Image 1 (cartoon, rainbow, N blue to C red):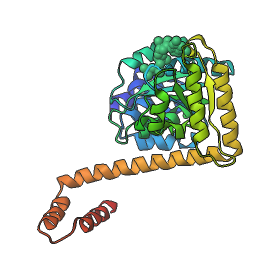
Image 2 (cartoon, protein in one colour):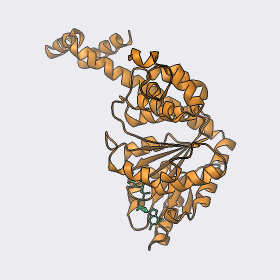
Image 3 (cartoon, helix red, strand yellow):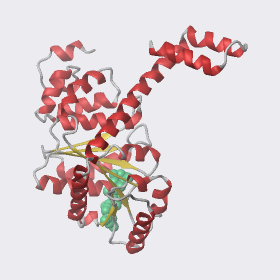
Image 4 (cartoon, rainbow, N blue to C red):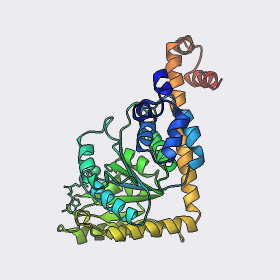
Length: 333
Ligand SMILES: Nc1nc2c(ncn2[C@@H]2O[C@H](COP(=O)(O)OP(=O)(O)OP(=O)(O)O)[C@@H](O)[C@H]2O)c(=O)[nH]1
Ligand SMILES: [Mg+2]
């Protein structure tokens, strides 16, 4: 705990290094980007202040519309995000952007590219853009991202766009945190097949076939529509939309926005929005609980409990299941 940071009157330096959660949240509420940045850093680092931050932000849960964008590297996620931000700003929305890379513990060069591509909004006080890595956070990005979303909700963002790189399991996990998930594909990248393998098809609410200025766009659209047709869907279930775009020229962005709106309407109409928010909360609680358990098991390993049990199991006096039960009972205390 940095005492100095707290005694300094609230200014630039103190906000950047502050550990005063009520002050940071109050400032974030007024849209102070430094307070938002500081809170997200604390979240990202898995700081010991996390529970206090979560408690202070709890009243603002569920106030923003969360839209996830995922897809292979270079498919055009940041370009699309940038254009969507423009469209949302034109409607007067406050927008938060989180660019997360689940596959690497540190966000690397791609982020610099994102910054450049989203430069258009760098001086707009109605836009907050942030890159995130999973460094330090016990539950990884799947646990850190919803908390960062809460920070942005607390800061008054109406919409939060979450860009994740890749089409693997970790991306599916992060993308499933959104109310509406956009999966971006490009012609000729074999993305459609990879998407099926990674279970992306199940989480996509809207498919965006970007780079529609390239050859093979019709075939890609056909592939996806074929896959959607094969997917089992009960009556009243959402049928994923397919939208073409040339994000680099701002084309198709209105169609993407319209598809997001349509999905939003469907979510509300079918009570699915609350169900998704609850599923998200459940995943969050589980990740935190597992993180705590893992930390406690780690500390048990250093102690005598585990070695005592291990000795008994090794000499045949106890079976490992019973030993694990004993261990869990000890952890619960
Ligand atoms: N031809 C063409 N190029 C595009 C289009 N949209 C984006 N690009 C280009 O594709 C490249 C990658 O775009 P990004 O928006 O950075 O892609 P990304 O998916 O965010 O990439 P990562 O974050 O690295 O995974 C850039 O050079 C863009 O200018 C498009 O519609 N058509
Ligand atoms: Mg990007």
